[in-house]
Image (cartoon, rainbow, N blue to C red; front, side, top):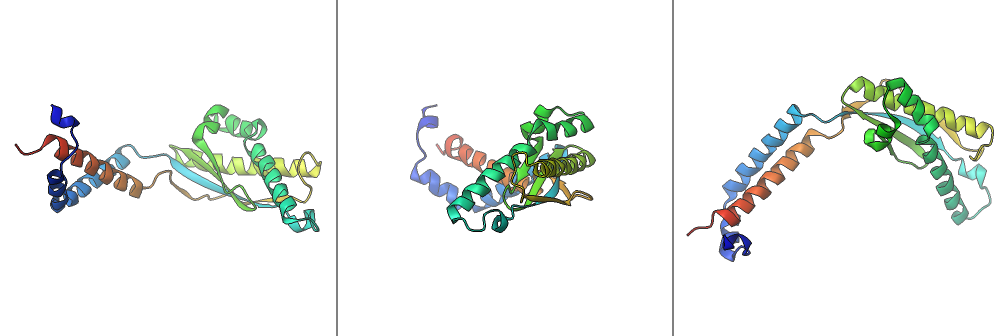
Length: 204
């Protein structure tokens, strides 16, 4: 068993590199295994809603330096993110779909592109309709809450404007694509096969 703890020799590596048929077959077999896992245990559906966020920087800070504008954007963006994940906003989703807020924050919802322009609100679920409803409700509730805060000057700059750009007929895909499973399966199978060849099938 001591050979298991010894590093591969140069002959072992050369033998493995020359086995091009092994690499091709291993990649195919691994990809097929990855595809089988994808169709037997498919990943959740993922829906995406979009809200346009405009900080109106020119109006909010017309004569200020770039540094001040940068801090303004960073500060207001952080406030908007806090609203997106607030109990008030997520509570509507939790009540509507009977999903605990902890689960929503634990990875079921994802927020992308938190800056000026389009904010993407993603929701994952095993059912495509639930994923669509979650993403749509999240985006709409966020938009409503931001508008309320701006209207009463409650912590947000009055020049901020938000608009729910895409909250109906949302695009739905799988949260992980088939190509990722194919690539992961091929790489994992080749890696395991290479280890087996190097450590368990040495000649004589």
